[in-house]
Image 1 (cartoon, helix red, strand yellow):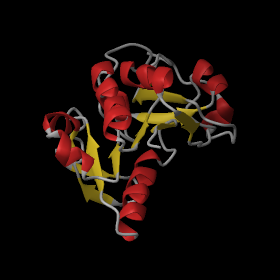
Image 2 (cartoon, helix red, strand yellow; image 1 turned 45 degrees about the vertical axis):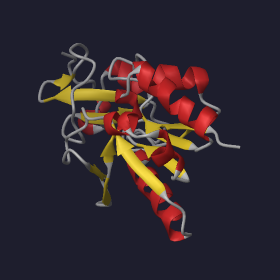
Image 3 (spheres, helix red, strand yellow; image 1 turned 30 degrees about the vertical axis):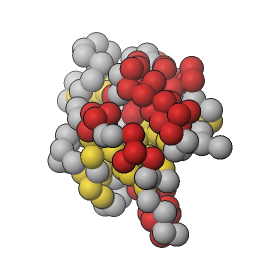
Length: 197
């Protein structure tokens, strides 16, 4: 029976690498897998899924998947969605329809919460309706589990601004909740807090 999966983790937890490995694993055994992502994620090219470790693969946009005829979607053995936090709740419901009415498993990878520890709408909808929810873990600079996607700039931790700001290691770091609260981006200066902006 097909299921809707949501694998979430903080930045740096290898979500995209896992999405690419899942795609590879399906294709390696002769199954047909479709890789897609929301159009807003154009950091590495409009139709490319790219991980920090250098893996990449062509994809389609989630918006294009929504326009596909049902018989074309049914031809796939799996749909894999990267950066799913950027999907609208209605798009998540569409993905659940693929599972429920077309019997195609959908595997989603993304962030759970933004830089203010507020749920992304797409992630919130997945938490409500996914069949399987699992965390991909990463660590803070202190060695504790990192759960906070901390936005920063040259002045320190950024506490306000738009929910979506595309970026990678140049703009975000994963921190444990304690160091997120303290605004400590790293152990430099004896672990003193950097000023929040």
